[in-house]
Picture 1 (cartoon, one colour):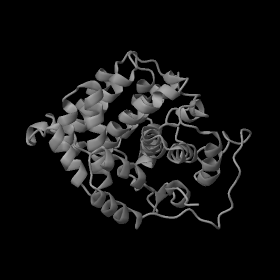
Picture 2 (tube, one colour):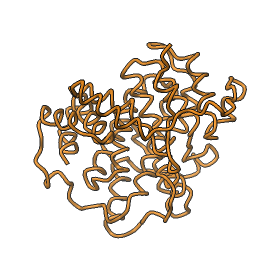
Picture 3 (cartoon, rainbow, N blue to C red):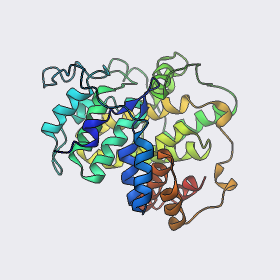
Picture 4 (spheres, rainbow, N blue to C red):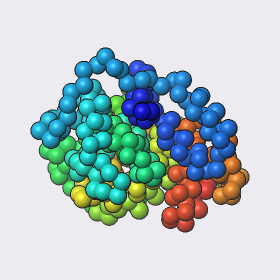
Length: 325
């Protein structure tokens, strides 16, 4: 029996914890109209960088009694994968999502994104892989004991505008770090100067996915930054995963805090007063599909796909601007 991609390849590779984008980008490439040759070329190119799941590592069995205690230990992906393979079914309630929701910043949103692609593809193995990755790299940027300790009268838009202004004024420069994006998010979220912004994000007055996706899109258009790109693809992913979550308020609050933590890691020099769309020709939907289908980088493929899907859902033409940048 042929093993699925998730059974063979690890969700991350290399010392910097680069995320395995291969199954997600392959799906997006196909949806964008990529040819069979383009799909084969991309798969063969991406697989050579990945790491295989070790057959020598002892796999800890995950059950209900130890599920929560092992969250975020980054050694138990295969155990969580086996757990979710038993419990996931297409069209069914997804297990443990309320627990996972608190750590939605897992691997800088990559686990959330992979879960959403599994849902989009209706692929049980990929849904299980995304959820297992989410559990294994679980990252809570606002712990329960600090979640309500900071009152906020902010709207999402006003908080985002304040941070944008401070970044343009040279304030809130990211703390120096050699860690991956998720490590930088954690460091900035724990810093005494930057943590209040993360806590204010948790307690905004108008929390909704609509507000969050607009914040992410605005920051990308003002930075054209790699981390900001991930907040846009994460908001697309959140739209697909949200219907399966019972405690949607906690999920959205942690996502909002995570997005702000991610924004705080972006270098100030990347921020511009005007958005980047005026520098580029705005491409049509068909032109963007061709651009995405001809891309060789997984981030480019997925970003175009997310922008087109969000444009189709919301009708917000700024997604076409973002994908054209």
